[in-house]
Length: 267
Image 1 (tube, helix red, strand yellow):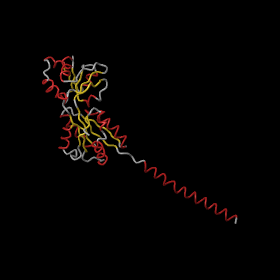
Image 2: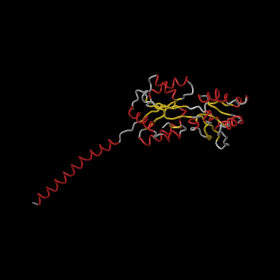
Image 3: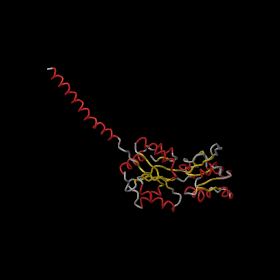
Image 4: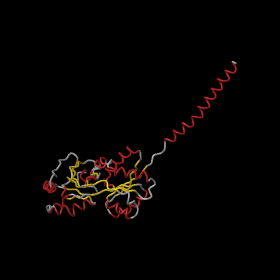
């Protein structure tokens, strides 16, 4: 009887050991399945909204778990834009000025049904960090600020063309004012280097420049608004994830991130 009891205990021990070893691979397999690589979306983004896009990337990666890689392009000239936009074919989502988006839709590169408008940009005034902040609170005050400034920077893009070809002439500024204008790729960077006392450029562009302080927007009656859009690239390898990002932009959940980047959210 003692031998039988010993054999029974030994048999139970072997059975438990066998079950434990058999269960181990299943546990390892479940752990491995949980480590599914996350998707990375490529955003083809206009450099004029760098600050806004970086703000969106930080917030969306946190709330969604989806990684976002940003490839920038310039909308400064039609010639360079034409070459760079061809690269949009390798992206998942494009973020650009509405006029550029119109071109991409017409070329069949972006799905027209997916496009949304997500932010407005307006012209603002900036000074070098630590400098006195001029009065731009009214049309009269803004005009006086321009008249008394020894140098005024503007960018050689669409907003700069608006300033030099429409706004400044219509404000009837003194004849010598044009001699105090400083043109550059970035009005904000020109001011940061101390090459101009004040600079005028889209708020969304000034937000990404260090060494300056944004005084505020120019008066409403003198403004030029620039609308920014987003859309799904046809042939995107991650259409579901790209659509989820666009839905997040459309929902209004992105409003604070858009605003931090110098844009006025639409929703």
